[in-house]
Image 1 (cartoon, rainbow, N blue to C red):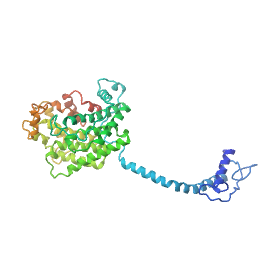
Image 2 (image 1 turned 90 degrees about the vertical axis):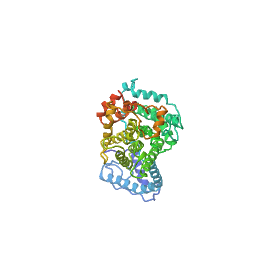
Image 3 (image 1 turned 120 degrees about the vertical axis):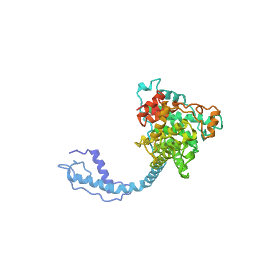
Image 4 (image 1 turned 180 degrees about the vertical axis):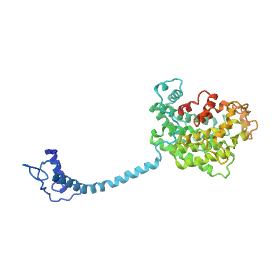
Length: 438
């Protein structure tokens, strides 16, 4: 049994007196006659609720319970009456915040990008070291986002072609800096990504031209890598931007007459599908993910034949456009793969699959077959680019231009890795850090 000291007894007595109204009137409590307990503290001790006593007998327990019950019954309504309005405001504010931020974390997790060991960080020849050096070189740069990017259908030095190419480098810088942050946990890199992301999503206005906007995939990856650590303002603005981007492309496609044709069946559509899929998985938007899968299968049906040949090869007579068609579909498949959804072997009703299209291209990538580019292209702009001396629009196709495609594919199935390594010893730097060789 514990002995209640004099000071503790006075506190207990004061609490009982306040409850019963025998001393000062408490908030909202009426004065009532004091009650005396008939319980005895023990031999030689005075009886009564305010006398020092030993606690532990049944009578003392009943007194304590009685005090607690009376105090709760009288004080609780007073507290509720005064706090209810404030609680309502708090709840309303919380609900508003939840509405602004539908998802606090990116869900695609496209990149594995584990934190690297110190030895790897310090390796002057490693890709991540190059990214760190590049990020440090631009640490104090002011972002220069454009309202629109536009390169489609234009030649170098025409319109805003050059400005668009230059501005789009910031998108890749964001992605690479985000990878550097994931590898090092250096807060300076996170702040840099936060600053550039906010500038771009607050400035850029989607045109829904997938050729102009295909490089927004780097912005999506930068967000996906950093979402859980971004400032609330940047995260909210980026989520809103991506929702607009994904929903806009879906609406654009769904508004077209069926069957889809022209730029809604060729490489343009593959780039739309990539942007929709990466956005959907980054936001973990179930409705958008369902739309992305529907559009991916539809593009397989419309763009890839039963033998694996893509529509663009027939139109452009160029393996350049086979690669340009399959790269975005492979990126979309990688976004899905991180969610354990297999789009590599996914088949359309006509039997077409991404896997079959890669198999069709493989003999060319390995040099077993060759092709003279754009000889019978049906698109006049291809001849304009050839005459302007744009690289890749004349002569034999260079298999090395499929390096990125087959390294991406190797992340879906390691059987593509020997093909990729024959084309180049190492993957593109960002991919090697993002998804290390399996």
